[in-house]
Length: 340
Image (cartoon, rainbow, N blue to C red; front, side, top):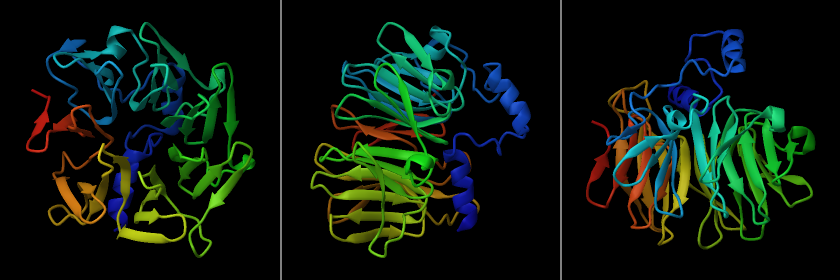
């Protein structure tokens, strides 16, 4: 099992340069010069075809357009054409890891090593450590009920009130600095899933969230509150649901991550399973759970296509998810990819 976990987490940990072959000093020199040596350049700014490389996250904005956070940059799909905004707006050429739309309609894009962009519909503004971010490796984004923006990074979390950034780390009570996922529950409490545990924030202080044995959840990769108020915890070694009193382990042994819910309240998530085809690669499955049974939607197990990344359910009920070869749309019957 260890090889499966280690290979997968090399892809999930956005700051890792183990895959690069470049020394840490060389990599930092490139980043300081505003260059991501692993950015995947697109041939066209506007195309009938979508991104053909890793798509880590996606969203549908209030106007109905789709946005993709990809290794090829920030890409918009209007239903007909794909526009690479990284090229169109001459943005920094860095891997884009996550995306988010706030209540005002601003779009936010977190990058690997490059900071976070805000797009107001007219122009992009880049925020980095020079502006107060705790790290330029931004892995997840959240807006709280008060309108503050939160940015999870590999060295802590930053809160942005529209004017200034405030950073929080383990010295402030976080269970770990490597933030993989964030959410706010219906009571207003913020949850932070880290590699070292789960921390809850009540607006004043952080507290550790532990299981019935008082132990921290390790390698937390996803958090979700469902329609009934249950908390879902995706971990490197399984999936747990907490009903406010007790914990139920629904799946075990392998990583569960990218948990969302659809309009009916069903829970969708990615789960890794033992790969009977290629023993050194994880076999990833997109599941739907309706409260009673798990339904397998699709599985990935090919050497060049074994990842299922972020996912959304669009206005029409279609499921979109990111893969190693761009986005895919599932309408309940068939899968549509957008590459040539």
